[in-house]
Image 1 (cartoon, rainbow over the protein chains, first blue to last red):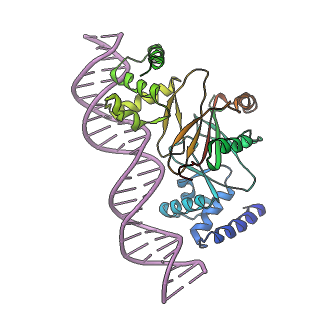
Image 2 (cartoon, chains in turn yellow, red, cyan, green):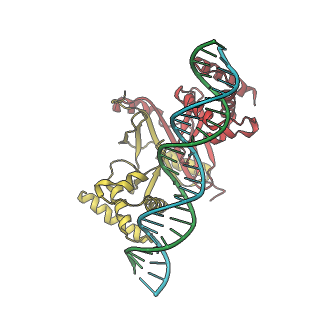
Image 3 (cartoon, rainbow over the protein chains, first blue to last red):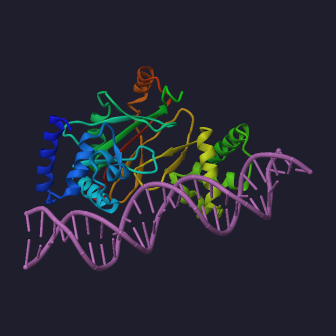
Length: 145
Length: 145
DNA sequence: ATACATGCAAACATTTTGCTTTGGC
DNA sequence: GCCAAAGCAAAATGTTTGCATGTAT
């Protein structure tokens, strides 16, 4: 894990404590997986997490992910797969994704998200609160092409 | 079912025949549900479809939906729910959605989709083919607010 | 010491497949 | 009549909950 990731981790653990979460082995393991991941992870990915050799129980991971999401520390994504995906929320950053419908590879898109300002407008017109969005592009990647 | 929907239905049945699908009772029922629906439907919605009193078998509906999606006649959506949603594709039209994370209500958004042109750019830069996208806004609706 | 978190196991929900029968062409 | 599609039933996959035990505070 890089120095940058380590800093993030301490920072996030602090936010977890603020939210009333205890610093358990499972919590640290889950956060490590998510902080170091290059793309969103499924519950099974996190629970398995071989490199961290933390085989945490799925039920435990499930409850942690649920709570972390509820506290706005991680984000839950659809990504069109049968299982849900999770990724860290880094303040001020938002990722959109490009996904191959053939092999399932997920790439983070490096672009200025074009819907940020729409969000404010939609919130105003619809009366919905706590608005956020999910934007994914699907297609066939060059390797599968 | 409105006249407009009826026209759509004939049109779509034609496209299905082109794709090699037989005009079965189940196919007609599935298409009727989807054409008349105001928002995307789950597999269970379509199979149950009470108003059409067509209790089709779920396996049948599943296979039909899969095939229809494969032929580009319907679209499969994530919508963050546990089950997948399906909606008709009306040529030249694309819908984005606004979803309440509390009660689950799904509203179609009436806006010029801001990512259409991005799509071409992404396709060019990434080499992905057959690109399409999914854009959803999530939040708490006024009733749940 | 206490309350919260874990792990195991079992219940659920949904999707997916196998196989026989039905019905469109 | 032939082959694709339907229907039934069962397997596979992923999520969620109950409950006894362990552990952070």
